[in-house]
Image 1: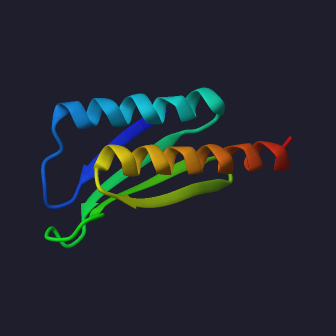
Image 2: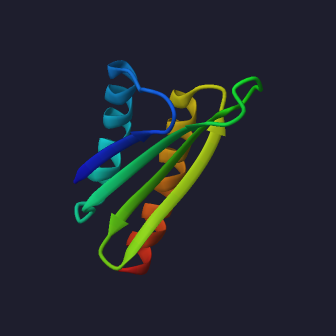
Image 3: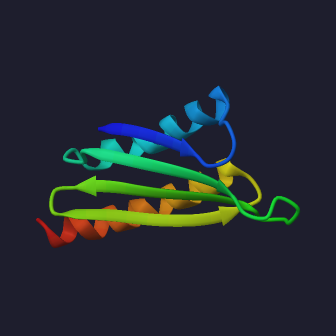
Length: 97
């Protein structure tokens, strides 16, 4: 699976990118026919709390799964989005048995 990370209006450091790769690679272990995963990181109103947004889209044959989460840190937002995608993957696998 190809993993691409896009940070909008800021530069993601290596530690954050490694964290994202580690989290997203768990999705690849759940479903073996995923072709691509795109992670978009955005800052929403820098002066407010809960301003980090992680959007993850996972491309599967015939369908794209998507989830967006907002939190105080990018790590928390990515973890929440990955957890939600795990539920979506389970539903996808059940539907396409």
